[in-house]
Length: 255
Image 1 (cartoon, rainbow, N blue to C red):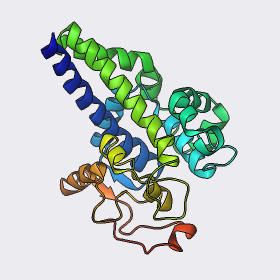
Image 2 (tube, helix red, strand yellow):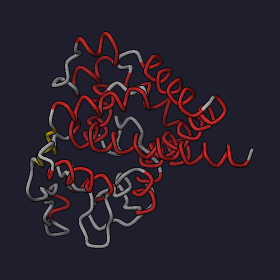
Image 3 (tube, rainbow, N blue to C red):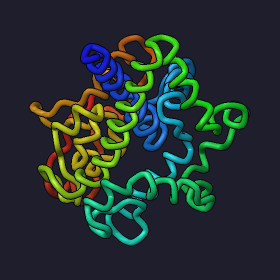
């Protein structure tokens, strides 16, 4: 029984880490901020991975995130701990996301460049179908006990990590730049780099979230491998800091 639990935990954590890589590299850096352009085959692979591991609709995620940047920690922010308290955002992040993601005005305004495609209508807009296929695959490969438990571990780790970026990441952490987000390296390890949130808000269009030698951004390593394989191209060679951030620190190389 203990072996079953340990195996399920390892598999669940591994799937969650893959889902976080797809979230930060594909949804966040490639789609939301256009910081990196990837080969169509890589885009489709990430899109499928997001579908079966999270059920997220890319244009909705992009729209909510862009609105967060447009109204960071002020009225209009979909999930601000400054307005709602970090504990509430941590606990209710999924509900806050769903409320904004299901707002057609938000999607039409902030995701104009991501129109609904035939693939969306047939597959990717059906979140429960994608998640069911993901769980079914786990059960078929690992058996029903390990598969279901691994899915449970992944669900809690992924949702908890995503909530922490929005909640804890806007309340705790180092703030080398003048913005309301914080850098938390431990959270960056869990979310493939997203925990370096102060850096991100200082330079939103940078494909690299680590700005200093001691900061580690796992998502950036994935991007670098893709660039070496000629499957991705970083859009910017240097960080472009926001005016506030530029006043507090020098731009550093991103590639």
